[in-house]
Length: 371
Image (tube, rainbow, N blue to C red; front, side, top):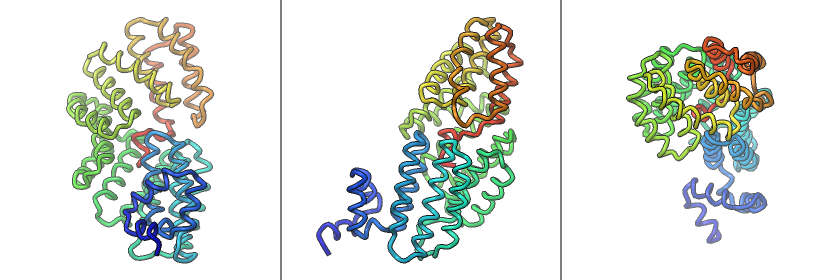
């Protein structure tokens, strides 16, 4: 065994991944071809997890890593059965990245192929490729497609397959809560998070802790329990800083601004909402930009600032060209924008459009990217 091969055989999986990520695509191919320590299911699983993490801030990075996982899976040692299983697992993560990129039809087809490969494969012991994770990721796709019954059924199968590992249980219940939230069952979503809390606290996973606390505060706000939501916000903000995700910080500010509005702190809410709207627009996130803009219009309309509402409506023109936007949501937004241009928009109309967009929202937000 060569010196390089000995060093790689003893290196943790994360170090092998770090080495590959630091090289060009051509160099990666050479390393994988030469060194068997890169041709393992454990490394495929690690790259897949990196793809899920990347989805929290960049669908492009998530797609790139998922594609790399598929490249590695096709070269896994141990026979066709093991390769097929690895390819199925990696393909499921590619479908997840496509879901985050709002390519739902493509993700649907990719997931069908993922299950074909997975079911044709052979498990090994120990197996780093967890079947529950594929059910969990498919549930996120079904949620984005508004196929809620199918999403909840996949989560039931995920929970049955995951054992009692705290990370797995926590992720599945957080995903369940997000589906219930999207169905506007805020009390049910909060109950799922309360059920998840012991497992998530035991896991110590900062990403799960962020999801638990953020989503709990968000559902408390929906239930108009503003004081309870406000109590959670300092810990949510601290976790967002720890994770170093700029979009998560923007989302925390958005939630804090909405809570401030509910508590009557109007000027604080306005300052936060204006920053949030600008950040979401800069990141080309149409749903979030539309909703935060409409939050602003509700306040401005209460204050009689119809000219500023008209100006903001004109600035939302780019949203109508964005991909992945539900037709009914666009129609509702267009109706509001036209009313705003004529200075005829009302608070009631703005709230109706907010409800329509929230109902139709399909794009995975950064906080849901790991669901």
